[in-house]
Length: 529
Image (tube, rainbow, N blue to C red; front, top):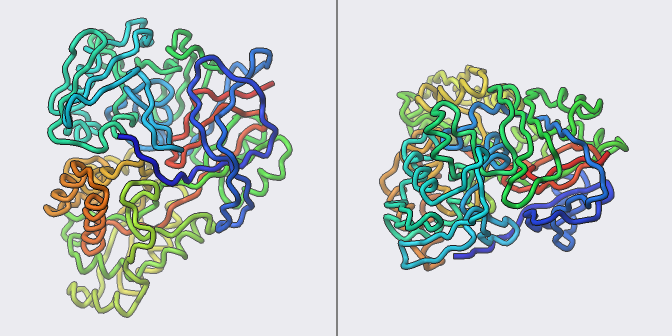
């Protein structure tokens, strides 16, 4: 059940590292890389090194503040599954298992061990020292409760489907019976949406009990779409983390985040504008962290809409989109053009997948086949920020083939509502891919909150079901190749580019695990004084 993949993670550390280790803390290894600002320069990878923690004699700041680029709208782990929410969920909650993204190895978390009884049955032995923030022990019944509740969750419902039955054998033993063999199951349940909830907390407080987790931080104050204030959980199963208070503060504008970092108002700045990277490098008080990402920026169609439900129109638009120009305008070229809507570290990824060519003549011919040679209006919904630039470039490009684009700029919460209810025609958005091949179900599966196209294809569903049960790697890869070929023809989504990840941080920052799928782990973050 262990699988390795080519790791894309790398880090630029311009400040000296701090020596020392913390007692019992998890610190997955990752390659360290030094490279220039040339988007095509990947540098040289050195020996993998764990995220370091401060020694006992090092004084750290009591409060660390992180400037984030997207709103946190809910602390219910089963209601939202995206990068913006996975970051805080990793701080407050814990899953049965975790994954080391450097090796692809599944590691213990709330479960100290597990055993496959047969090809559809697995038993987990829970740690007996794990507690929730309300002081209650983590029990097998809490795991059962979590899965049962999750079947109705907006983000978790579709993901829980493979679990046919989850039962408590005793207080610290959980048995899961799957509907069918599932190669990706342990990988899948390592995601934050599978975080274990306290049954007692939700019975006592149905409105906010989901904030009670078993992670290293407790929720102190949460103001939706503004900030999340956390305080250290002293009884955390792996021991208290270095920083007492941690705040995630929403600052939508990249320039404002950087200014806040430079003035010391915040300690870490997520996703600074690429035109400011040299500014960060030149500042002796700051460190620039860079690592390849698995987040794909994309343009999606609503396949249920009367206009964008026209496959020939979608194909025409695919031929009229110059992805390099969009990437250059939006992120100054610091990324990689995407050919398939598939994560670069996801199982089944095809390195040089042949996609629709940029060909305006072919695009105009397809417009005729679509019956739209006289043009058509198209609304593109986009949240504020850099993606508006992508929408504006698309607007200019599609004008060349008679597609009149109207941009509908909304906040992220409104965008989620609009796209969940299929009230959009086009959408510019991003998706951080994880490693499992069955990630395909997130974007092409029925009922998935991340299937922004509301796309359905019977053969794709059949192939996903076949692939997740297939233990023969060659056969499994063929299934995933066919899915990508069908999706190319149907074109519910035009993948644009994979972005690189950049963070600007206080030079004395340590203890962060930088993941290529953007789910950065801040659990053990600290800033020395």
